[in-house]
Length: 117
Image (cartoon, rainbow, N blue to C red; front, side, top):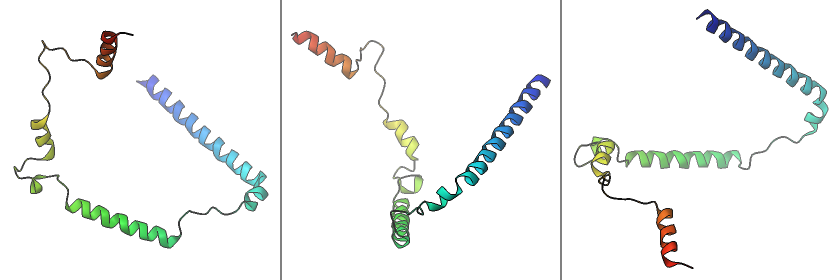
């Protein structure tokens, strides 16, 4: 257990060193390329603030409309069973062990072999 703790401590220290190195490299690059960074045009979004607000309102309205009409929970089901319970009753049964089921690709290959060239 002591060995595991020592390894975990070493890994944590290495992670902290990597983070510190990354931050120092970032700072050095910011200082070194400061003029180039400042010459770049500011980032712009493809939507205006007004369009973003309108889209947000529309999505909220759509979300509230769908949450009012969802089929989850006993309040919207005739039987009172939840959606997962209903799925359990409607699942397809597995074929009996004596029957052979083939995937579509296998069936297609077999049909091609039967037809011949």
